Amino acid sequence: MLYSGNRCGAAIHAYVLSGAGEKMSIEYRGFQIVVDTKADATDTQWLCRAEITGVEGQARDVVLPPVELALPKLKIDVLMGVSMVEHKARQTVDEWHIAHPAPV
Image 1 (cartoon, rainbow, N blue to C red):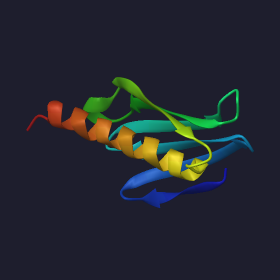
Image 2 (image 1 turned 180 degrees about the horizontal axis):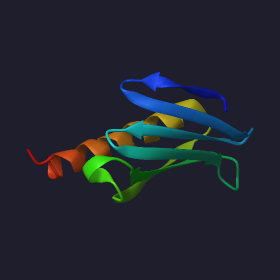
Image 3 (image 1 turned 135 degrees about the vertical axis):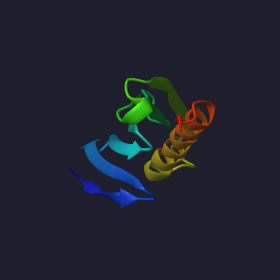
Image 4 (image 1 turned 90 degrees about the vertical axis):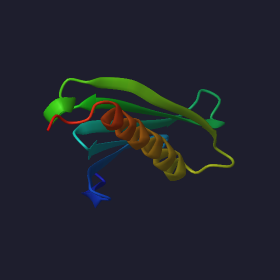
């Protein structure tokens, strides 16, 4: 494990898989977001993908569509790619919570 901590109210667990990519798991608002980043076959782009699965409360067993980004390696560093796909995944979770308000 490379890092484990808390950022912006989300538990974070990051793992380095190899020199070519990175994997990170985040718990955010009842969902687990697993971000996987790797180089494409031509080694010119970062392929970033976030799987979003509900793990707590009313989100339990909910699976949201994955977030996918392809980013040019010459312009975007791998950590920026991870940050971008993580941000979009959090937005997806926030949108789900707006569409499915908790019962009072």
